[in-house]
Image: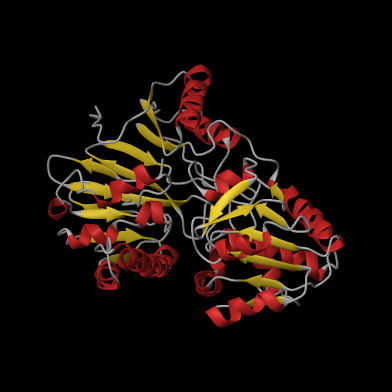
Length: 447
């Protein structure tokens, strides 16, 4: 389930962990217009794991409703959050104008959010409020994403945030933490395992070669952040090593263009392999045939380019953005291919396409789906079941002479029902630890 929002309350202070927008089916998205389940003006601080909308998207509403505390995040997360929220404000204002209603928030609210951010880097123990300390660890999910280790009233609580899927292009693997009283672990892929990430480059090479042979168009719906940069990294490698010819590749997303500039700002957050490539003189976000098309005019000109060509555009679940215009134009042609490289939530157009729908509605018109639909799950930025269990097992390591801290309970969160229940059952069976599956609005007392 998206819309991450946890409240940690002691006798003295109230701390919010993430403040995300609900995304997916319309009934779920209606929750974005509801009041918060707490009083925003009583929140002392907010801790942000990373800058995806389902973790930061309601911060402007929180500020509008009276929150006046500080917001703690890593430096890349702060930079990304401004871009993500400004883009979201623009989209929401346009939707609200067409519907004749007030938008959830506006750019002025985003400006107020950004004034409240304070930068905290990895492994820098920081006092959040009276009696509560925070340490960020690398989550390996997107650049700057964090696992949050909180100590409050003598208890240690670890929030996994969104854990990455190692080994990943660009990023270091998620950190392992050895002790905690309580753990909240995400479960997006609690019931699935990905193909090995190192196979992604070979799989995408095969898809591209097939599209070239058929003189078609390859559509890749992609999140503007992380997934697009991962794709660029692999395409750069394929072109430079002459594994694929330098056919036109279009990054048709103004947001992805701006986010890529932020990636260039923080090379110290990359993994060792990527840092070595950069120091060797490789520009990992530039190769022959690559074009960024930030303006509408440039985007429309893509249609004039003779195939084969590759179009990478948002949104990753085909719920809006420029990709839907390309899908409306190209999905009916059997020479073309749509390649899904992101998680597809229930109720989205992307989910319908990967599930084999033969007809879909796009921009108020019915479109027959004759293009090939391919999927690569190894690009996922989320840990799969195998890695989630590996990460949790690390809390069970023996202490060898040091005082041991037994893990009291694991809360399984942030997943669809099947994924949550599958992972929870596995934890009970293999780790023998008490598990809770909290529902929205539920309160748990930590002893």
